[in-house]
Image (cartoon, rainbow, N blue to C red; front, side):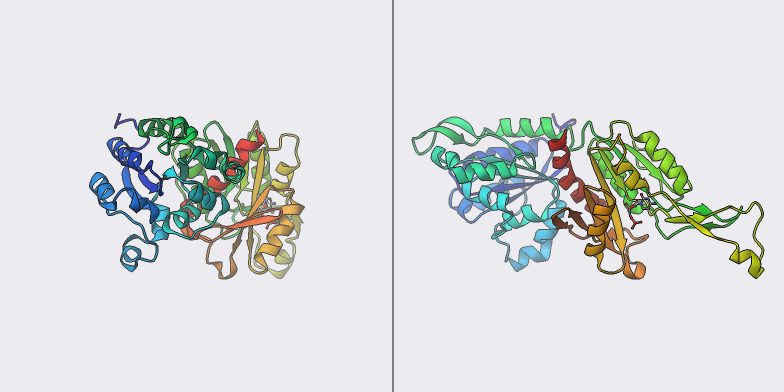
Length: 403
Ligand code: C5P
C-alpha cells in the first residue's frame, strides 16, 4: 500500500470538528499515516470536548493545533504557512456548522481560516443528525461545495442519538480509499491545456529585434503545475532561458506570427488555454536584410505595424477551448484595465498583476488577482508555482461544469 499510495509523503491537514464521530477520526489519522501521509490535526474547540488533542498527538506524532490566536503556534507554523504546507485538507467529521462556514467563506476559527486560505485539494466527510443533514440550509451549503471539493458520505443507518437516516460519517477506511482513488487522477486528469509563455522577438534586421522583459517563468510554472495535476500540456514559448518542465510538450517560437501559427495548430479539443506570453503588440513593418547602420536616415526607416492579438483570435475561433484565460500586466488602474481586456478579448477570466517598477517580470514570486466578469479573486501572494496551484484550484471546477 505505502509505495503506490497517493498519500506517500503528502502533507495532510486533518480537520476534526465537534461531533460524536470524532472517535472515527482517530482511526482515520492512523490510516492516513499508515499510507505514508504526514498528518497535521487541526481541531475545533468543540471537537476537543469529544476526543483530547493528546490522543491525536500520540497518533500523528505532531502537536495538534486548535487556536488561531495562539502566539506560540503562529511563531512556529502560522495559519498561512499551514495553508500552503497542505497538499490536502480533509475535514472529518464535518459538522453542519463547519460545513456552513466552509461553504460560505466564513472564517471564525483556525480550521475555517486555513480552508479559506488554502488552494490545495479539499475534502469533507459530513457527520450530523439526519434531520440536520436534511435541513434545506445544510443542503444548500452542500450544493455550494459540490464540484469544488470532494464530499465523502454521509452513510445512512442508526445514529448515535438513536435516529435512523443519513448523516453517519463514512468509515475511516472508506474515506481513505475514496480519496486515494480520486486524488490519484488529479484535478486536471484527461484535460488538454495549451499555455503560451515568454516574450516574442520581432526582428528589425539580422541581429536586432524588438522584445520585452518577460522571463517566461509564470507560463512555465503554470505548465509544470498543470502537468502535475494530470493535464496533457502544450507549452508554446518565445525565447527564454528555462528548462522544459518534465512531461510537458514544448514548442519554441520567436515571433508573434510564429506563436499565432503554433497556437492554432495546437487547438484540437483543448479544455483550457492560458495566454501567459508577453506578446509584442507591434513589429517592424519590414525586416532589413542587412544590419542597419547608425546613420539617422536608417533609424527613421523603422516603421511599426500591429501584430495579431493571439488570445483574441483563440477566444473567437470555431475551435475555442472550454476556457480562455489571459494575463494583464498593468502599471496603473490594474483591475480596471484588466476588466476592459477581459471584455475586449472575449476571455473567461484574466489574471491581473501590477508590473509598475518591474517587480514581477523575471521574479520567482508574484501577486495577482483572478478577474472574472462580475467577480474577482485576490490570489495569495507566493511563488509563481504556488499562485499557479491556486489558479488551477479555481479553474478546474469550472472546467468540470462546462464539459
Ligand atoms: O493587450 P495586452 O498585451 O495587455 O494583453 C495581454 C494578454 O493578451 C495576455 O494574455 C497575452 O498573452 C495576450 N496577447 C496575445 N497576443 C497579442 C497581445 C497580447 O495573445 N498580440
